[in-house]
Length: 637
Image 1 (cartoon, rainbow, N blue to C red):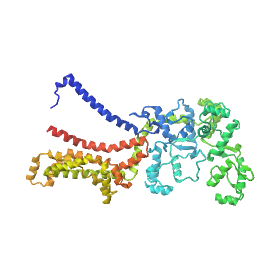
Image 2 (image 1 turned 90 degrees about the horizontal axis):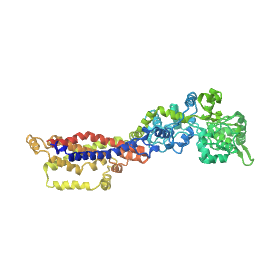
Image 3 (image 1 turned 120 degrees about the vertical axis):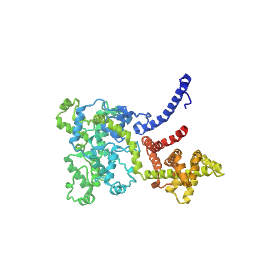
Image 4 (image 1 turned 120 degrees about the horizontal axis):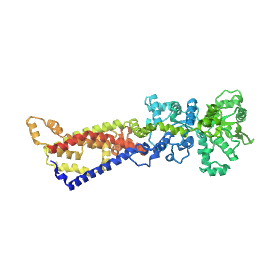
């Protein structure tokens, strides 16, 4: 029978009361759901949108936010790579916006150039390969690369370490950064390290749309000129006696800028001879005799050079003059010739003349491609709607090409950002130790132990009613007054004395009996009809049969509560599990997730919290019907 009758509900005051109740319950639900939605939204975060706090991530609805987030991931969270490749100079990825005016003919020329030319591996980098700020996240192509290595070495990290001469502790610790051979400070090894060779082979399988190409002009502007003269173009103009309106008007010429100002010439020489990696530097054939003369004066004897180079040249004139050598000593000689080498006693210096140097890069190869197709700059301007004054003013339209490419794969990118942190956490759990296996075994044993020990103790108190029942119950309830942290040290010492540390016994035994669970079960058993027990005794049922077939059968709702409580305590057990099982082979999921959170950023932390909550939600859903039946059925009776 309802507490308020149908007629009584028609009164205005009652309606207001009922409405207030529903409003209060709704507000309470919102206060629970809103933080969960924030956490769910947080699973998509990276460094660029970490300050954002909304239940719907902006990149799902805002194209500018999507561009900034994808640009960060695409260029491997390297602002230098982004600005030098797109010539879009911004202070951070949060300020990056897609190109507004797109020149589709030039973008088409760029795509055709990339498809028609086999460019060297150091001309480009793989997108979505590494992260610098969003720690813990596994980008798309890093996951693919690891999958390739996993298949190649049959999932055995020890085989990979042996082949690569590396020391990765697990597949999760395998990370690799893209090779950036802009600077001379980054050594060029030939042959490359095994893992770099594997990455180069993998890069050949990556589509052009998932590569970004390294612009020497962009690097010259961002990492050389702006480091020397700040980002103030006026200061640069004042120093160089020029009148450029923006940094994008400054170019890095293929050859020595003979028509530039004295300061521009000096910048070019300093950049090429000191900073730029020699793999980009080529020399005219006229420089070959000068190089051989340098070798003669440095080594004196061809036998000595052969010994160091491990070669078999008969004369110095036979030594080739490439930019890359198989021996690092020969490559060092090439660098010395570029920078200038001399004997202090003779005060004579041997150095490559600037007029014989030319630079090879994607910028210049694209210019050559356009020149071969259009013949004249005027023809190019007419076909593509541009206004270039000369070939050397044409830069690869990567900014527009990337902006157009993103427009065609917006949904794909959004899905990737929604799932990549989740995948990162799942891979960490599945590939890091035996955390998942240990957690399943621990939770199962904890539930089974709780459903055997606690009901038997409660049944004995309820059925036989010993004189000290209430004292025992009081003692059990008193255990709730002490938090688990208080008992950690005594429990640890006891388990150590019994030599049970780092075993499932150490996880199960301390929480096998629970005073509160026994108290609940005892009260539930007391409410069962005594006539059932009397009938069973008359029929000759044993005590165990009465316990199992009558008491346990009628106690499913309370047993579901006990099982849920046992699972929750075991699954969420972190500090105790870490204390008594310090061997990582015995760690459950919680210690592993804690370790992941310590070395990760917001997105991965939120993803780990969401994943950690899923098993508890599933178990509660399975137990919910049984628990509700225990609440509703007695009322209906």
